[in-house]
Image (cartoon, rainbow, N blue to C red; front, side):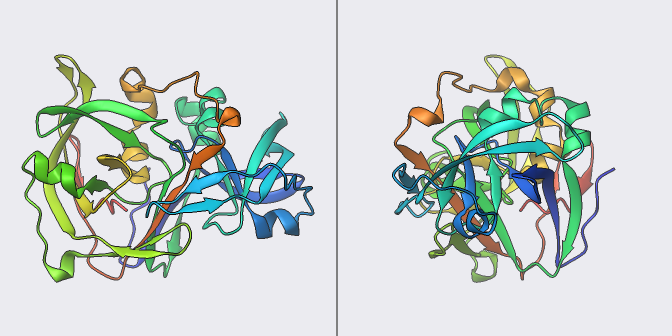
Length: 295
């Protein structure tokens, strides 16, 4: 059963875990090439940080932020005994203490296996949250095939995103109607706390999963339109989880399994907070019509 949010509430999907014997709630971000820790949290745990192992992180505004090092620590799902030794990149500032990325989530089938998902991912309602978050930590690592208004295209299946996003240039190129009233704009805050603003909304856009001549039933979605978004189409956590996308549409994913983040000197990190002090968004699936809070 899905939790139904009230106005001002936010649905949050967390992975309860033990990291270096400390209890935490991790974000499972299928759009992330690697695993990340906030520096303050790593320091609080007394973790050894290899500060010579740094890299570049590109946030959603295009700005590059330098990581401060890496650490290797034991990680386990809270209700399980198996211990995983994971490498984490350390960020000087991050909107989550712990983020586990696509490679680990895929190997452990945390999202794609419904039994694992039910056991490991916990949904709760957070009250009084005034901002939405949008995370993208990886270069095209979790693209899913489909179509937008009947035109074949890929979308980023980003479980770290709290909002449906469409790039402005792409929306205009395919003729999507963009409503640009002031009341439709939202302030966005990136991972480094830099700020931008969406230009408006595109309502009732048809998205289908599939490729060639085989496509799913349509999903009618409402997208925030963002200038210079990191990819053309980004699907949010509530949409992905409510529709069991990682298990139902596994064949549509175009992941590059040879893409190991440990070899990369440059990593992408897109994080956007959305101001929620406006009316909630609505979305429709083939099964239900509800205030889906596509954040």
